[in-house]
Amino acid sequence: MNGPQDLGGQMGFGPIAPEPDEPLFHAAWEKRAMGMTVAAGTMGQWTIDESRFQRESLAPADYYASSYYEIWIKALEELLERHGFVDASELSSGRANGPGAKPKRVLQASEVEAVLAKGFACDRPVEAQPRFAVGDRVRTANRHPETHTRLPRYARDKIGTVEAVHGGYVFPDANAHGGGEAPQHLYSVVFDGRTLWGADSKPGLTVSIDAWESYLEPAG
Image (cartoon, rainbow, N blue to C red; front, side):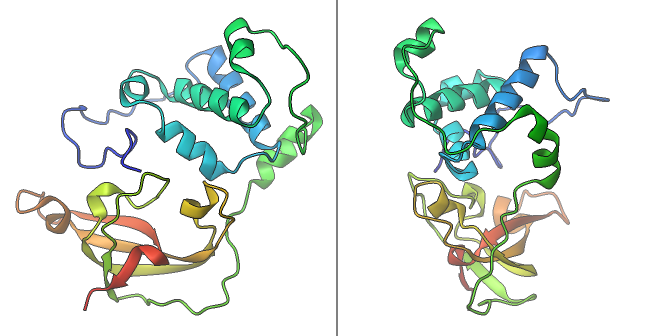
């Protein structure tokens, strides 16, 4: 999806300015936003890829006017409503009208530390051998889907070189839309800056992206 999140190479948004000694959270509500998002995600009603797609589906004006955790909360509200846990009137009033949908799982407070420490692995076995090897020249697909994709807009229909083969991983383009995990081989592909940005690119600049196998074709 060519949504508001896909800003690579876009001008007019100002420089990236990391905050020195930045705290984990800038306000108490941000802690709650993260906690609610993680707890809701563990209910098992949607995947992390559906959650990402919901964030990038916010209207651009809304997305750009929102802070990081505001984006999280706005997407979470949409997910909870879509899956039957709340309705619009409940979100508006802040009061429950009924029990809502029953979650598959409930994350208990005593389980939080262990669940976060364990993480959520997304590597999966793939029976087929990888189509590409380190050093292969590849061309990325020229696709502009309305659905979720992890192939950034600036790197489509570009020639690069495979620099790493990572094994099989959940394919987010399918997993975000109920298509199952559909694992594919994942590669790191490096591009010369001039390939992406033209002759005005900074000399010596290279950019690497992680690309699933269906994003790639032999460069020839």
